[in-house]
Image 1: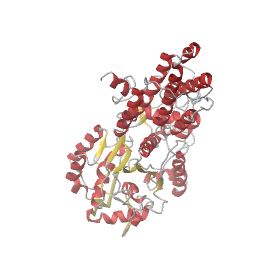
Image 2: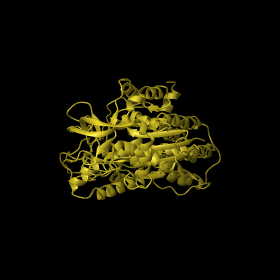
Image 3: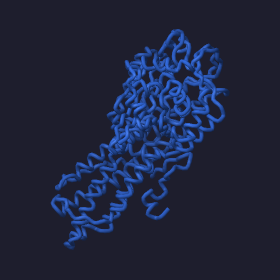
Length: 552
């Protein structure tokens, strides 16, 4: 048994949550559930980054107090736990949790040998909360960079260049996928500059944690936010050892836009403080709408102003087109300039159910490459695989056991599905270790596909009509396979897993109940989701299990 600390990033609360962050939460939740099922000791934590200048500006734009805005929006992030069926163990808020500020202050003092004060002038993006060496526009947010000149505290990052390179190159800090590892090694090899870790009270608008011993300065939001991985473990009281230095793995799940902070700045800060670095940095790419990143920063043209959580999303692939499906599956309407934050995860769950949302995020999103979201694609994936594939299989099997054996599960078995069932778990474990959710879910779904083919080959209805003694073995094999599918699905679709297990448990099965209602919209069949890079397991390729069987 291993001890595993698993974290997501903590998002700014300048607006309500969007589907892009739901992706990260669901990915981390799958890993947490998977490791618990393996018998590991797991702590899964998330939270919100309240101490950002973005939050201050969002409050000013709404004409409300910063505290009111962060409390309101942080509550929306915390509320995702129920609709998305998340199993996190802790949720920390950096402006409200009593563990955080004293922990950040202690961490600052622990790094004091690498902190110094100097004047700095540079180009700053409020959206990223970071400086850029050159340019007029932020490459991440496509917003103008602001020239800032002030005296701040700096961290001596340059001291740790060789040590960081060695840790990542040698695999002690594992960065997945390899494309991101190579990206960060190239960044380090080019040389590291010391970076600013404080802001003036005036520029921070008085919001944030003051620098210990220097009340005219506020600790830089990224220093503050990264510290949550320790402060949530009671670092301030020195009680973090069980889950930090005592953990076999310290896993961070994050988006590619914040890779540098987690793979360079954060490990250097930990080394400075005498703490161990993370062991795993698992990086996902972006969800997009019409090729644009889903973000809380694009706020033009949204009914209800900043942070509005609903808007029109064209089912054919782009925002603002009339006559499509909106994010809740309604038809008609539309307007230009739709806020991409309008892809509201709670609204999607209310419209289609948690299984549909989690399954799309896990089955459609590739290991490498951005992917476009549309409601129509979510519906197609749900109806094609969950309703017509998995749900149809379980309903057929349970119905046939009731029709032909009065609901009593036969004890006899055949070996026809043993191979696909036996391979699925191993492929799934390998895929999750590689941070490849598409390959992991493909391995699970391959079992359902093969079981449906087995039904069609064996024709239990014909065996019943002919009075064949083989019928019991066929039905027993199918029930055992459905039970196995319930187990395999548990990390990915915990709600569906429980429903399937409920239908298939015991010597006498419960009456059949449809598992996944259809959501088919009217109109032409949807195109496949578009990726900008070749996914690791394209949907047009054979499943991992099928490929293995073919000797590929």
